[in-house]
Amino acid sequence: MAPDLVMTCFVTDNKNVIIKQAELIETGKFGGLWEPGVAEGVCYITPYHNFEDKIPQKVKDMVDDATAKIKSGELVVTYTLDRLDEKIG
Image (cartoon, rainbow, N blue to C red):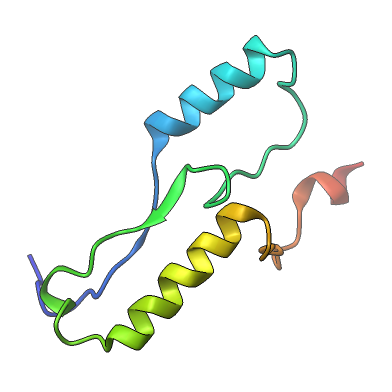
């Protein structure tokens, strides 16, 4: 719809979220607050499409490196939003 407007976006793979939750249930680890993301394999950045040739390779490499570090646990993403569960209890 707007090929020159959106460079990429962050996507949650809902199918994979359900699969991961089923695995947690199966292993007896389901329950409580679960905040899955890149490290858990349920979120990812979409391809650059029309911006592929416009983004410097160095920048794409930095994104790939950060993603790999998040997946390995070397880089931990912290949450900055207020958590409702902590305000209720």
